[in-house]
Length: 424
Ligand SMILES: [Mn+2]
Image 1 (tube, rainbow, N blue to C red):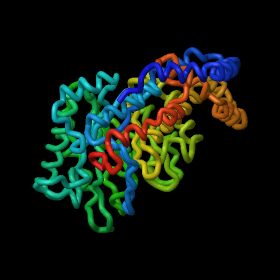
Image 2 (cartoon, rainbow, N blue to C red; image 1 turned 30 degrees about the horizontal axis):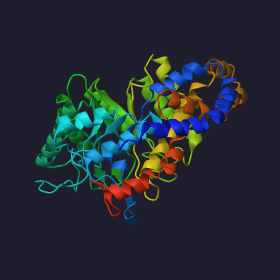
Image 3 (cartoon, helix red, strand yellow; image 1 turned 180 degrees about the vertical axis):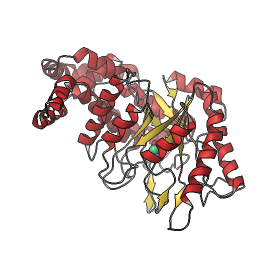
């Protein structure tokens, strides 16, 4: 569903004077405004197909109504987000939750909304109906070769679906691990996983990347076979140049220094992609920037600095995606907030005076280093993000227009109140 274009125009018209005033003010003291806006316009964050419905916890799920009933409707929802913010130009599919029945028509539908297909995600953490072997005790790590084979074949199947859609990367996240001491031979589990990943790697098309995502705990609570960035890096280094580590912000132990992890992975040329969310305790999957926007800024500061040091393209050389699941918010409003938080942190990182910061570091001027970083963080860059959106054809305030036009009410009318989005 797309909104009528004139409604976007009318809304922008109503808010343009106020915006201009704010934009001129912030532009008056930032010297690289045009460059920042160009980079913001180019930056796109992929929306995962599983974030469009209300998520749940193990205690319950409270459907919000009007959720997408099919892959087509999920694409419509991402198309709507992209129409509003012009920064959500990609969708990431989860197989088998979102197997397209006709890849060509799905591809054409996505193209109508200006969307590309980001990484495809495999699933060996659940048993599917009719599946021969269970993943209860792991998949790629499993002691039984036939279970490993089934999991390898599933991943290769996912690559095939991705090729049909024009995806260029596979994300492998494994629930594999153990929940009790003594359950697993760590070395054998690692070796089995590596061998399995090698077979999947061998099936990658030449221009594809494989992302190996790590997670500290859950669903296993004693050990995870890809439990941290060091373990992921071991696998990706052994696999080869098409394998990269993927950082999901919620997959660390509390207080982990994620910005330092990012800096070192970039230095090694092994950072492949990012899953954005926020958390206070664990893998909470909260709205990006809702708990710790300063950490998000510090991460973006390392991303920008590290990518610039390698001459990388901010928009296309890493995979950017939101990975969250929402319990109490309207999923579309939540995604608008998340994308906005990402753009704000990115804009703040782009205005850090990196020469001055480096100079302060070289002189052990700790106080100035902090002042420079926090000076950028405390600038209200929202008018820059809005200006980039306006120039790309989006709206000045996506969330406000979404509410004003009663989009959710309209979706409930079309799709019904008691809907459970596919895959959830
Ligand atoms: Mn993730």
